[in-house]
Image (cartoon, rainbow over all chains, first blue to last red; front, side, top):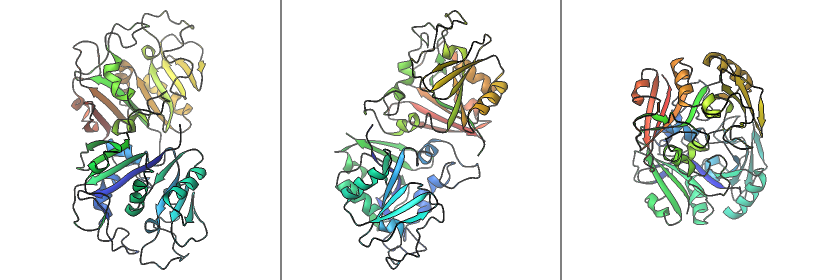
Length: 214
Length: 214
């Protein structure tokens, strides 16, 4: 099977907001609370880094346990790696994830100011000034025949959707509204011309939207 | 994390029937139609053996794509391996799955009449006269620190549930009733004293029940 381009566990509000515009080192999602958007994932047994043996093992755990399976590389935007307010390129900043980021593959960070690669645990970050199509070509080559994850943030995901480069996408709609912020969509139905859409509501109240190409 | 005992993608009718009693070489589920019980899985992109690139990639595909992940051995009953009407031990019978069975791990077949191991593709079948606890001990030792799948059939699954050896279970309830046959339960709530239960209905009309230990 050919390499696929996948989006996994991407969280938005009911009104389509994925992050605030007021990002800081302390608040990677700005005024948006990641605990509200991603709380469904934090409570599952397979949330990355969880090692206490606890957590739920139902439907939503099937989503977190799938995070690394079959994925050989990730592409992310500059603001998923570093806060907007951080001087750039500032090589002291090593991302939000500590010494063992959960990706454990090559990760391509899109930025107009590249810097040397950064190795943290099993993850290597490469910094790339490239279009979505160019970045995808590099990520596929680095992915050892496995799939490529588009990791966000929302601006990067929009760019890949606009370039029609996404094969499969899971978006989790949390039961909260923000009114302002960085928006993925007005409504999920916008994508139905290109994608099948299945919507499943979990016992957490989160609506999980699964998209795959028509 | 310790090795877990898991049940995956086990299909039953609304009235709890998983197979007919009238099994033959042509009808492994007897009067029960596996297309009715398991049709939800056949249509997914990751159903074992599917290689045409088609199929759905929604919620139910998350269940079939998880089938081999983290599993190091399976335990199955004699009637999952061979029909009741087949002479036993008849070493000409090599199971229902052709030359490359989907398990790709050691598989322990419980039988009162053991025969020598059978290697088919990446799967090795071992035939064992043992209690559930004894079989599980052998399967865990063979699973290379990974989890053990209890593969059924329904009599075997009931024996492992009765011995309280199951950690996590996914059962798919198809929108069909049979009245007679081999029964897993009267109702899924029977297990709620020992397990959390989450119930999710897919767009296929199948209700997926997720159980994990309290």
